Image (cartoon, rainbow, N blue to C red; front, side, top):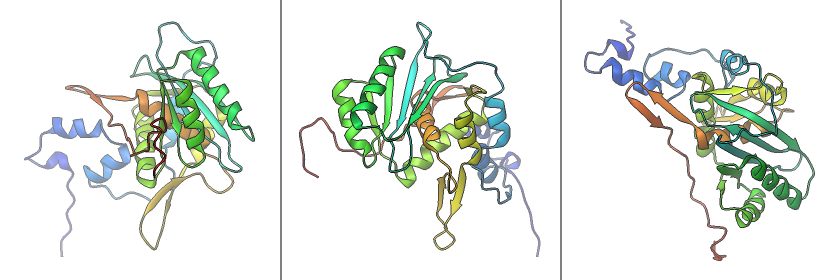
Length: 257
Protein backbone atom coordinates (compact mmCIF):
# COMPACT_ATOMS: atom_id res chain seq x y z
CA UNK A 1 0.00 0.00 0.00
CA UNK A 2 0.99 3.62 -0.39
CA UNK A 3 0.03 6.69 1.61
CA UNK A 4 -0.09 10.28 0.35
CA UNK A 5 -0.83 13.61 1.95
CA UNK A 6 -1.36 16.86 0.02
CA UNK A 7 -2.79 20.15 1.20
CA UNK A 8 -5.14 22.20 -0.96
CA UNK A 9 -2.42 24.65 -1.98
CA UNK A 10 -1.00 21.82 -4.12
CA UNK A 11 -4.28 21.40 -5.99
CA UNK A 12 -3.82 22.98 -9.46
CA UNK A 13 -7.58 23.44 -9.87
CA UNK A 14 -8.02 25.79 -6.88
CA UNK A 15 -6.44 29.23 -6.70
CA UNK A 16 -4.37 30.19 -3.66
CA UNK A 17 -6.43 33.38 -3.38
CA UNK A 18 -9.61 31.33 -2.98
CA UNK A 19 -8.03 29.20 -0.25
CA UNK A 20 -6.79 32.31 1.56
CA UNK A 21 -10.32 33.71 1.50
CA UNK A 22 -11.66 30.49 3.05
CA UNK A 23 -9.09 30.77 5.83
CA UNK A 24 -10.49 34.21 6.70
CA UNK A 25 -13.94 32.71 7.31
CA UNK A 26 -13.15 29.79 9.64
CA UNK A 27 -11.03 28.95 12.66
CA UNK A 28 -7.44 27.76 12.30
CA UNK A 29 -8.45 24.31 13.54
CA UNK A 30 -11.09 23.97 10.84
CA UNK A 31 -8.70 25.28 8.18
CA UNK A 32 -5.94 22.83 9.16
CA UNK A 33 -8.33 19.90 8.89
CA UNK A 34 -10.35 20.88 5.83
CA UNK A 35 -7.73 22.61 3.68
CA UNK A 36 -4.28 21.54 4.91
CA UNK A 37 -5.11 17.84 5.43
CA UNK A 38 -3.45 17.80 8.85
CA UNK A 39 -4.00 15.16 11.51
CA UNK A 40 -4.49 16.96 14.81
CA UNK A 41 -3.67 15.95 18.35
CA UNK A 42 -6.34 15.22 20.94
CA UNK A 43 -6.21 18.58 22.73
CA UNK A 44 -9.53 19.35 24.38
CA UNK A 45 -9.09 23.13 24.61
CA UNK A 46 -11.43 25.12 22.39
CA UNK A 47 -9.43 28.36 22.47
CA UNK A 48 -5.72 28.36 21.67
CA UNK A 49 -3.41 29.60 24.39
CA UNK A 50 -1.48 31.89 22.04
CA UNK A 51 -4.76 33.51 20.94
CA UNK A 52 -5.71 34.26 24.53
CA UNK A 53 -2.25 35.69 25.29
CA UNK A 54 -2.36 37.89 22.20
CA UNK A 55 -5.87 39.12 23.04
CA UNK A 56 -4.77 40.24 26.51
CA UNK A 57 -1.39 41.71 25.51
CA UNK A 58 -2.54 45.32 25.26
CA UNK A 59 -2.44 47.39 28.44
CA UNK A 60 -5.92 48.83 28.94
CA UNK A 61 -8.59 48.60 31.62
CA UNK A 62 -12.33 48.02 31.65
CA UNK A 63 -14.35 51.16 32.26
CA UNK A 64 -17.96 52.29 32.60
CA UNK A 65 -17.06 55.53 30.81
CA UNK A 66 -17.94 55.21 27.11
CA UNK A 67 -16.12 57.10 24.37
CA UNK A 68 -18.43 59.49 22.48
CA UNK A 69 -19.11 58.35 18.93
CA UNK A 70 -18.06 54.74 19.52
CA UNK A 71 -20.34 51.76 18.80
CA UNK A 72 -21.03 49.36 21.67
CA UNK A 73 -22.55 45.89 21.68
CA UNK A 74 -23.85 44.01 24.71
CA UNK A 75 -24.20 40.28 25.38
CA UNK A 76 -26.25 38.91 28.28
CA UNK A 77 -26.11 35.31 29.47
CA UNK A 78 -28.99 34.68 31.86
CA UNK A 79 -28.33 32.52 34.94
CA UNK A 80 -29.63 29.04 35.50
CA UNK A 81 -29.66 27.46 38.97
CA UNK A 82 -26.12 27.87 40.40
CA UNK A 83 -24.68 29.83 37.46
CA UNK A 84 -24.14 33.58 37.09
CA UNK A 85 -25.97 36.11 35.01
CA UNK A 86 -23.21 37.72 32.94
CA UNK A 87 -23.04 41.00 31.02
CA UNK A 88 -20.30 41.87 28.54
CA UNK A 89 -19.96 45.07 26.50
CA UNK A 90 -17.67 45.30 23.47
CA UNK A 91 -16.50 48.42 21.70
CA UNK A 92 -16.88 47.44 18.05
CA UNK A 93 -16.06 50.81 16.49
CA UNK A 94 -12.88 49.42 14.92
CA UNK A 95 -13.88 45.99 13.70
CA UNK A 96 -10.25 45.01 13.22
CA UNK A 97 -9.65 45.84 16.86
CA UNK A 98 -12.77 45.17 18.96
CA UNK A 99 -12.34 45.57 22.71
CA UNK A 100 -14.11 44.07 25.70
CA UNK A 101 -14.63 47.24 27.73
CA UNK A 102 -16.93 45.99 30.51
CA UNK A 103 -17.76 42.68 32.20
CA UNK A 104 -20.03 41.92 35.12
CA UNK A 105 -21.65 38.88 36.68
CA UNK A 106 -23.93 38.26 39.65
CA UNK A 107 -26.02 35.51 41.22
CA UNK A 108 -29.42 35.05 42.84
CA UNK A 109 -31.01 38.26 41.61
CA UNK A 110 -34.70 38.60 40.61
CA UNK A 111 -35.63 39.16 36.98
CA UNK A 112 -36.50 42.77 37.76
CA UNK A 113 -32.92 43.45 38.89
CA UNK A 114 -31.44 41.77 35.81
CA UNK A 115 -33.65 43.80 33.48
CA UNK A 116 -33.03 47.12 35.24
CA UNK A 117 -29.27 46.52 35.39
CA UNK A 118 -29.06 45.63 31.69
CA UNK A 119 -31.16 48.63 30.67
CA UNK A 120 -29.08 50.97 32.83
CA UNK A 121 -25.79 49.78 31.29
CA UNK A 122 -27.31 49.88 27.81
CA UNK A 123 -28.28 53.51 28.38
CA UNK A 124 -24.83 54.45 29.71
CA UNK A 125 -23.08 53.00 26.65
CA UNK A 126 -25.88 53.76 24.16
CA UNK A 127 -25.47 50.20 22.91
CA UNK A 128 -26.33 49.35 19.34
CA UNK A 129 -27.80 45.97 20.27
CA UNK A 130 -28.43 43.86 23.39
CA UNK A 131 -27.98 40.19 22.45
CA UNK A 132 -29.69 38.11 25.14
CA UNK A 133 -29.70 34.41 25.97
CA UNK A 134 -33.38 33.58 25.45
CA UNK A 135 -33.04 29.89 26.33
CA UNK A 136 -35.22 28.54 29.15
CA UNK A 137 -35.66 31.11 31.90
CA UNK A 138 -33.94 33.68 29.70
CA UNK A 139 -37.19 34.00 27.72
CA UNK A 140 -38.83 35.98 30.54
CA UNK A 141 -35.87 38.37 30.79
CA UNK A 142 -35.74 38.79 27.02
CA UNK A 143 -39.46 39.57 26.89
CA UNK A 144 -39.10 42.30 29.53
CA UNK A 145 -36.03 43.75 27.81
CA UNK A 146 -37.80 43.82 24.46
CA UNK A 147 -40.67 45.66 26.11
CA UNK A 148 -38.20 48.20 27.51
CA UNK A 149 -36.03 48.84 24.45
CA UNK A 150 -36.09 48.26 20.71
CA UNK A 151 -32.44 47.13 20.58
CA UNK A 152 -32.87 43.85 22.49
CA UNK A 153 -32.64 40.60 20.50
CA UNK A 154 -32.98 37.04 21.77
CA UNK A 155 -30.70 34.10 21.00
CA UNK A 156 -31.73 30.50 21.65
CA UNK A 157 -28.86 28.16 22.51
CA UNK A 158 -28.90 24.76 20.84
CA UNK A 159 -26.00 22.45 20.12
CA UNK A 160 -25.76 23.75 16.54
CA UNK A 161 -26.28 27.45 17.28
CA UNK A 162 -23.79 27.37 20.16
CA UNK A 163 -21.07 25.86 17.98
CA UNK A 164 -21.55 28.63 15.43
CA UNK A 165 -21.57 31.31 18.10
CA UNK A 166 -18.42 30.05 19.83
CA UNK A 167 -16.58 29.52 16.55
CA UNK A 168 -17.22 33.16 15.63
CA UNK A 169 -15.58 34.21 18.91
CA UNK A 170 -12.75 31.71 18.37
CA UNK A 171 -12.09 33.09 14.89
CA UNK A 172 -12.02 36.65 16.20
CA UNK A 173 -9.44 35.72 18.82
CA UNK A 174 -7.27 33.71 16.44
CA UNK A 175 -7.22 36.54 13.91
CA UNK A 176 -6.44 39.09 16.65
CA UNK A 177 -9.61 41.10 16.08
CA UNK A 178 -10.75 41.03 19.71
CA UNK A 179 -8.83 42.47 22.66
CA UNK A 180 -9.42 41.74 26.34
CA UNK A 181 -8.11 43.79 29.27
CA UNK A 182 -5.34 41.88 31.12
CA UNK A 183 -7.24 42.41 34.36
CA UNK A 184 -10.34 40.57 33.09
CA UNK A 185 -9.22 37.33 34.77
CA UNK A 186 -12.65 35.71 34.97
CA UNK A 187 -13.18 35.94 31.21
CA UNK A 188 -9.59 34.92 30.45
CA UNK A 189 -9.82 31.87 32.72
CA UNK A 190 -13.13 30.80 31.19
CA UNK A 191 -11.49 30.96 27.76
CA UNK A 192 -8.47 28.94 28.97
CA UNK A 193 -10.56 26.12 30.44
CA UNK A 194 -13.33 25.87 27.84
CA UNK A 195 -13.29 22.35 26.35
CA UNK A 196 -14.49 20.07 23.63
CA UNK A 197 -16.43 17.12 25.01
CA UNK A 198 -16.89 14.19 22.61
CA UNK A 199 -19.59 11.59 23.10
CA UNK A 200 -17.81 8.32 22.32
CA UNK A 201 -21.08 6.53 21.54
CA UNK A 202 -22.51 9.03 19.05
CA UNK A 203 -19.36 10.86 17.95
CA UNK A 204 -21.02 14.22 18.60
CA UNK A 205 -18.93 17.05 20.03
CA UNK A 206 -20.11 19.62 22.56
CA UNK A 207 -18.40 22.71 23.93
CA UNK A 208 -18.63 23.43 27.63
CA UNK A 209 -16.80 24.44 30.77
CA UNK A 210 -15.25 21.55 32.71
CA UNK A 211 -16.94 20.33 35.87
CA UNK A 212 -16.79 22.96 38.60
CA UNK A 213 -16.07 25.81 36.18
CA UNK A 214 -18.33 28.41 34.56
CA UNK A 215 -18.71 29.81 31.04
CA UNK A 216 -21.18 32.64 31.71
CA UNK A 217 -18.88 35.57 30.90
CA UNK A 218 -17.53 33.67 27.88
CA UNK A 219 -21.04 33.11 26.48
CA UNK A 220 -22.00 36.74 27.10
CA UNK A 221 -18.82 37.79 25.29
CA UNK A 222 -19.66 35.51 22.35
CA UNK A 223 -23.18 36.97 22.16
CA UNK A 224 -21.82 40.52 22.08
CA UNK A 225 -19.02 39.73 19.62
CA UNK A 226 -21.30 37.99 17.14
CA UNK A 227 -23.18 41.23 16.60
CA UNK A 228 -20.13 43.32 15.81
CA UNK A 229 -17.77 40.83 14.17
CA UNK A 230 -16.65 41.13 10.56
CA UNK A 231 -13.89 39.30 8.70
CA UNK A 232 -11.57 41.12 6.32
CA UNK A 233 -10.25 39.25 3.27
CA UNK A 234 -7.95 40.47 0.51
CA UNK A 235 -10.86 41.19 -1.81
CA UNK A 236 -12.79 43.24 0.72
CA UNK A 237 -14.98 42.92 3.77
CA UNK A 238 -16.85 39.68 4.41
CA UNK A 239 -19.43 39.65 7.17
CA UNK A 240 -19.63 36.64 9.47
CA UNK A 241 -23.02 34.98 8.91
CA UNK A 242 -25.25 35.65 11.89
CA UNK A 243 -26.84 32.58 13.48
CA UNK A 244 -30.52 33.37 13.90
CA UNK A 245 -32.39 30.41 15.39
CA UNK A 246 -36.11 30.30 14.79
CA UNK A 247 -37.89 31.89 17.73
CA UNK A 248 -41.34 32.91 18.85
CA UNK A 249 -42.03 36.64 18.71
CA UNK A 250 -42.44 37.51 22.38
CA UNK A 251 -44.21 40.78 21.59
CA UNK A 252 -46.68 39.46 19.06
CA UNK A 253 -49.40 38.70 21.57
CA UNK A 254 -49.71 35.22 20.08
CA UNK A 255 -49.54 32.74 22.96
CA UNK A 256 -49.83 29.67 20.79
CA UNK A 257 -46.94 27.23 20.74
